[in-house]
Length: 309
Ligand SMILES: Nc1nc2c(c(=O)[nH]1)N[C@H]1C(S)=C(S)[C@@H](COP(=O)(O)O)O[C@H]1N2
Ligand SMILES: [Mo]
Image 1 (spheres, rainbow, N blue to C red):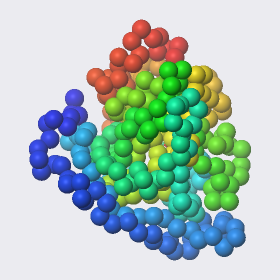
Image 2 (tube, rainbow, N blue to C red; image 1 turned 180 degrees about the vertical axis):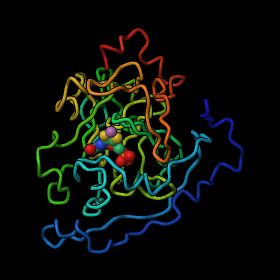
Image 3 (cartoon, protein in one colour; image 1 turned 60 degrees about the vertical axis):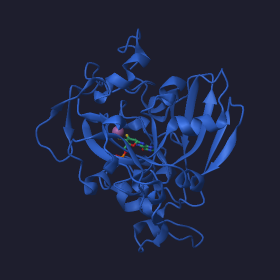
Image 4 (cartoon, rainbow, N blue to C red; image 1 turned 45 degrees about the vertical axis):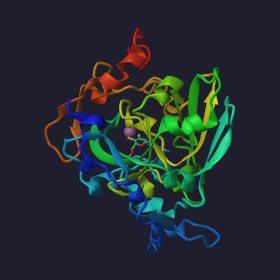
């Protein structure tokens, strides 16, 4: 496997703490199609700024060109076409922004995005494999999901973690149509969520997340299909019941709760055996758990993954 872990890194790979946040500024975007969708004179703004952190999960695989990562997106809140998020997501206001941590936890609380950005950040290269059959290799910046979960001190009966995206129809044109269950919701089992690979990204390619990629904070679960990686998160709740997920609600035969990348379980309408890496022509074989089996296979020991798809 091509994944390199932190112990293999040299001193030069590690960025000093002082440079975690070199610049942060609000850049008003030009007047685009997104702006006309805004009510009350609100300004379309996208936050930009440089970020860096300790490289904790790295690979020498070719990275997908940034242009593709930021223009070929699934973010139904801004339209169902993959070109629409890049066109319309600038209308989203990402400050102020808080994430509510609630449910079965000793310390439910509200966390401000600025608090997370001021903390130690990590850089990780992860593949993202969409259920539709394409994949990308992306350098993310963020924080382990476990670190945020621990703030709330989930109780022993917190068996699952439920995630919720923002649903703000004034700024998200897609939310005005019932194409999916709004707010977009996703879930993980608590042990999946605590796995060291589960990551909350606040940036990519050295910059704050572009809105179309899920600003200001989105999940990245690299061993599951892309739709588990919920964007623009406003709430993380601890539950004792398996949470609903937007895709399962919309097509239960096609999208289960687990949604692990699995080349042996076909989608009812297409095979999952291969994938097209964006920028390449020949399809690649899809790897079990998207190639992250060493880190996560133990989570599913003894489970029938045909049944729990
Ligand atoms: N809130 C929300 N999160 C979402 C989606 C969405 O429509 N809404 N699409 C998902 C899907 S299907 C994929 S493949 C990834 C795409 O992430 P990217 O655009 O950053 O590549 O986001 C996921 N997260
Ligand atoms: Mo996807």
